[in-house]
Image (cartoon, rainbow, N blue to C red; front, side, top):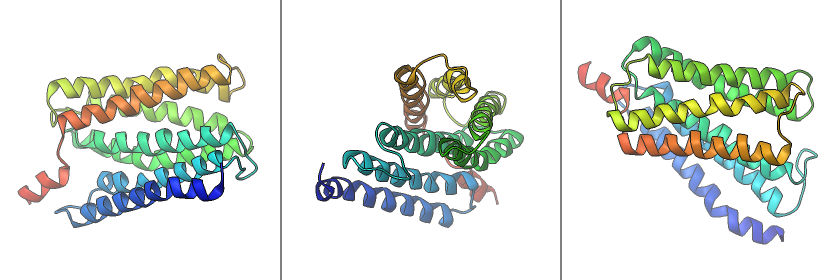
Length: 230
């Protein structure tokens, strides 16, 4: 596809992603209490911009950092779901819990997510042991996240959307199994099946269901509660 056409197609989504992230960041910084999960919810939109860049490379049939198709569209999807989606779900999970200990754990994961993402990128670029470290790190992140929510008194959201959120948080515990096997050189699936059973299931089951749960339950930011009680 022609470069001009690709730019014309993606220019508006890029601008909208930047504007949305900026608006959320402004809201986070003007809340009664500035909270890391609200900052992370805004910062996650950087991954959407990255996703659109890689999508543009794919649509223009170009290469970036030495990678061409299918890695360009796989990277675009990874930016969107493993980057933006996973970080956003963790940020929103913070709003569910009443336990301060679990809240601190989830806030710690907000830092772990981008680190694990960067290690994954290093592994794709060929840096030794990064694939193994990244896959293990993500597995730990998702186990800790689910545990922090389940045992963190998730009473700041009604029961039905809370249960749906727990289902979405459980999905990566299954989908990370083939990812770990792939990273450690013992693949269970070929690339096509990895896209289906790791990528698509994560995108729909973890990120998709997660967003549905939080849109349904609409848990409020902790800054609202802290602001009214301070």
